[in-house]
Image (tube, chains in turn orange, purple, red, cyan):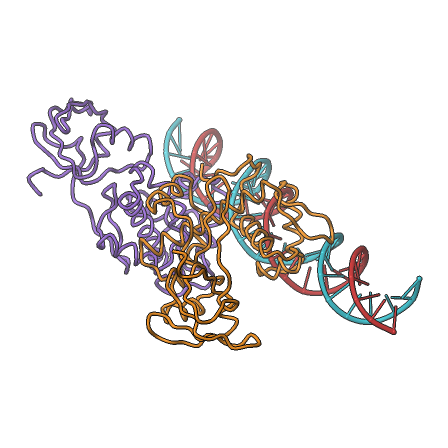
Length: 231
Length: 231
DNA sequence: CGTAGTTTTTAGTCATGGCTAAATTGTATC
DNA sequence: GATACAATTTAGCCATGACTAAAAACTACG
């Protein structure tokens, strides 16, 4: 009743199961191998616990587990992960747009709510937002049937100086980082003029809403932009 | 961070703990003695499980437990119960008003969401609704500091025939009942004319929005009304 | 006031899913 | 290929909170 996973899943999944699947999905999309240690570090449990849980998920046909190999999601596992991710990102946008929750807080709120969202509520939220495509950080929202689009753009740190860009995505959920960026006026879809790019991965100089700021290289690497003309 | 219970509570409470406390609170307000069997029946676990949990809640100073006696909430326990109830009722109203979730569905949705609502979100929701006093069923919403008002009104089944009333509260959360009432046009604050009251606790004849309906006595007993003039 | 019947509690089991510590496997280097 | 180091898995422990079955305690009635 509250969940609508692709294939029928024998036992109901706990928040925990869902968190593991989501973690595996995210690590997979990073392109890295989803090793046991990467997974356990990401979810914040010991490697032993991760092995344990991965084995259980494998029994449920949600992941493929071969000892000493990288974990991989099965199609069903991916569907579950994407459904949770859809919940998460819809919630982030909803909280931000409808309840004015600041963009640096929506992540942690959604982190808890995503597991208790019914289909009906998911639909109602999606409808009330006009079936949005991205969340407040520019992350794409998976569709109901588990499709997810690839967001265009490239890091600001790898962009040509002397041009204007539009911020389309921020690859971080860290509250402090997001709060900082927000203070600089760097919200989604804002126009950024790249004044200068220091060599050897140095800081960048940007102009946002008439103000000039220096940005550390690692920060600039998290900012995905497209040319401002591409509106 | 997500919770703000009156006194500091040593260990964090699970949904389960909260459900027990809420159940005890509700049974207490019904005026009945909160016996172990009443509690276990209400929460849907065996009596043995209830005893077990009540003992644990007693260790946390949330309830008073004396073997073979009725359970009672401590002041702290009551605060927790009221906070959850506040979450629940705010959520019900929010879901109904903001997302158009039908009034017969909001209860079950809120039942899951109430446990993962942060203070910040609770505040944002309350503010967005204009600090409401009652939920879509007319149940009073406890204030942030744990005060709860007593809703006026009396059962329609005990009202004088030939008069007009206003529906101020429905004492049921059952989906089917609420759906049925909704079909008759019996939503909150609707005006009801009581045509006839059959003797010996018989059915009542009411007129709602120009239509006449017969209502079973047990149904009429759940409808709390005030004289329509008292607007 | 004793006995029957109900309610409550106790005792003991099970599944879950974390943990630590130890064993194992895999990898890389000499 | 042996040996060292890192990653992974196994084994075994613990807390939680459900359960059943049995014991104990209350209540009420003859």
